[in-house]
Amino acid sequence: MRIPAWKSAGMPWEAAVPSRPPSSPVALIPVDRSHRAVLGNLGQLYRHDLSEAYGHLPNDDGTFNDRPLDRFLAGVDPQRRAWLITAAGRTAGFVMTTPAEDGGMSIAGFFVVRALRRTGVGRAAAGQIISLFPGRWSIAFQRYNSGVEAFWSQVATQVVGDSWGIHDGPTPETRPPDTFLTFTTSVPASV
Image (cartoon, rainbow, N blue to C red; front, side, top):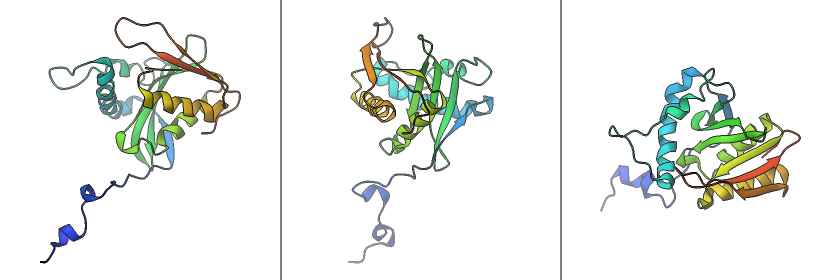
């Protein structure tokens, strides 16, 4: 029996583990108004990921609310900043920062597309953003999300060794309680 040429070449879905797209180099691109559509599209994926934790459903048109993303576009609120994450020149996610209540910096949103998770893209992007703003950092997440807690704990350890802390914050009425990972950098970090 002869095997068709298309089958002998092997299909990506037939592989035991599909290959991942290239993941380096990782770069941050400051977001401006021209990136509104890209940030909005990635924001839909981000909100979809969070819907599992928050119990949010999409609107009747199938989209999730993304109005908070508008605050991160350059010029709208200079205290809030956003960067697109690229890997090998391709859009890979975003990171958003805002001043923390204690005067340091905070990660307000962090997203890496699923195809590039666990490839080092997130750690590289986190290290780059932390290097841009040496000083005190406060990163909030939901503790029951073990993947996120493990990720930020690993980033903090790579940035400041074991000189970081973790504590639970107040429980808001409208979403799961946040856990805060805090640390201080004195020089640009490398992750």
